Length: 250
Ligand code: NAD
Image 1 (cartoon, rainbow, N blue to C red):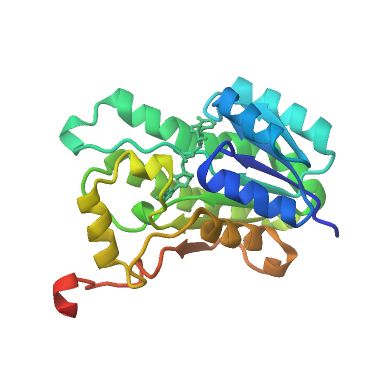
Image 2: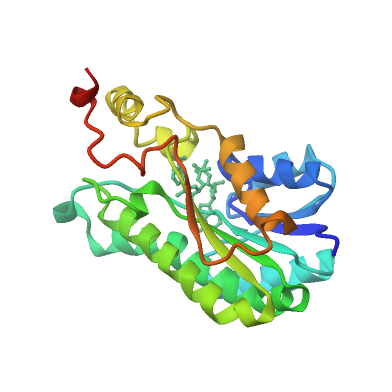
């Protein structure tokens, strides 16, 4: 089967934009989704083989309208990448309910809503879902009560999707990026944090948007046709190191 289309949320910049370009290089037509309508319009105008749909993925009505437009424009939907995400960090004691809900609304509700609304289209063609979680959903850390919990939930939601939609041939996998120098990360990473990550990551560096996108597009491709319900980190080895104390290496 020709896998000729994809929908990418949070596509206006960062990992979503890099993934859009990798799909385009495979010859796929991409529906780029983002709530930042101005930036989305700008980057979409610079690319061929894309359509741009402004949508806040945490709003059920906007998601329904987005799905109607995307299905009408693309015809078949072969892949959905739930990448839109927000990061707000702070101690548990300072995370008020509004901050908790802001993070959950995009990072968790958005994945649930877009996947559910696109499930009928994905079932028609045995499509693939890739949900973007995080190493923060695999390992707990300070300041990430909302972000880390939302990403851990995305990993479980992925397994639910794989379990329920497998009988239609729909595959669902999660990708857990390590740190990437995007606007999202740089808003919460000081130089001290950057240095500490370099120390803790076996490959001693941040990843690039493209390195994350390569795993996402692989999981959406027929080369991954027997892979579903999995959570794969692209993190320079961060998750694999149990007692990865920098002091032990010196
Ligand atoms: P980014 O901030 O550069 O891009 C995120 C995009 O999502 C933006 O264009 C933003 O407008 C859009 N977006 C946010 N909320 C939205 C909503 N409700 N509806 C529609 N669009 C929305 O971030 P990024 O670093 O490219 O992150 C992409 C994904 O990767 C996120 O899910 C993030 O949590 C995850 N991630 C990033 C890192 C990292 O270090 N950069 C690490 C682990 C996981």
